[in-house]
Structures are given as structure tokens and as C-alpha cells.
Length: 221
Image 1 (cartoon, rainbow, N blue to C red):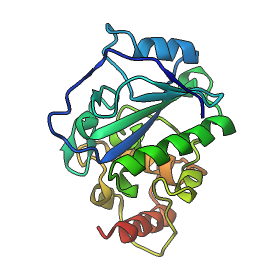
Image 2: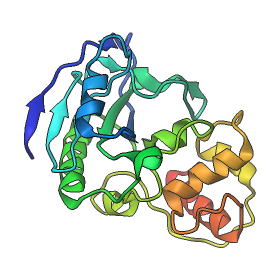
Image 3: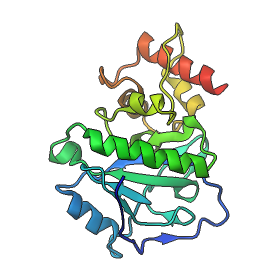
Image 4: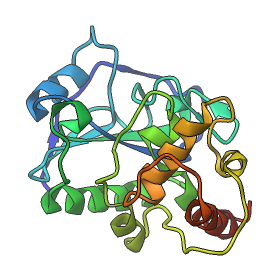
């Protein structure tokens, strides 16, 4: 994994918050260079701890002990504005507005290596390895339905549910951590982007209920 220091001035103190979450994003811009420039631009007031280019190169922007500004208005498991306790990783990808495409093997291999190191340094539970769309479902779609969450789970990063028989309704999404104040259709879509990307229809069904039941069982919620 090739790593390059590209410091961003956009960070501040965590104010004593423990690091207990990893949030994955895509850059959603026309080029990786444009995205990295923006993450390092003081006038943009956004940043991440790392960016991974499509060739697997990792750019380090903000020290892990500092708070990067990547999650924005966000919520998970009763907590708002998640920057203080999270590490943010951007993956270079044009996103849904500029020609969304699959994430290259070299990029995912570097991500798995980087995440493995982060998880060895910080006690981040598997259920708190999330996408931007999970923590901000009303306004974000990244890293999107092409992101290989199952591949990461196989490497010990995050969760991938085993289906079960269940009559859980979409209201139970908030038990897992999703924002109870977000529109329900946005919550369902965010859940499907992460855990059922092959059928992103925004409608709750028995398959979704079973996947959610499996997740809740695996976390003891």
C-alpha cells in the first residue's frame, strides 16, 4: 500500500471523544485530484482522515487523533454530528452525479489494509463500520450500491447479515442505529444500499426484514 502525506488544515480537537466509528465515503467529484484539492482547501471546510485513489494510493490528510470534518449533519444510535468519534475515509469515485462505477481491486485492497490498521488501533465494533448514507440517509448516497461491503466483512471489517425469517417492520431500523427522524423511505433505501444492493427498490419486504433481524441478532440489540 503506497501512502502519501497530503495534510489538510481542516481539523480540530476531538474534545475527549473516543474513536468508535469508521465512516466510508466516495469523493463524488469529476476527478480524484479535484477531490483531494478540495479536502485540503481551508475555504472548503471539509476533510477526511484518508483518501484512497483508484490505483490504491492512500493520501493521509488528518491525524487519527484529530477530528476531521467528513460526516456533517449525521446520526447513529442516538448520537448526532458524528465527526468527534469517527474516522473518515474517502474513496475516489465520481459518484452518482459524475458516472458512478465499480471500485477497482487495487483501491479495495488498500482500503482493507488501511482499515485493518485502524481497527487494530481503535476499538471500533463491526456494527459501527458504516457508509455516509447510513449516517446521513436523507442527503447522502455514498459509498453506494456498488461498494463491496460483503468483501470487507469477509476480511473482518464491518458486518454482512445472514438472512432470517422475520416480520420486523422498517421501524426496527432505528434499533440498529438509523436516524428515527429521517424519512422512512430514505432509511429503507440507505439500508438496501448497504445490505441489499442487488435490489435497490426502496420498498420494505420480507428479505429486508430477515436481513435486519440477522444484523440485530449478531449485535445483541
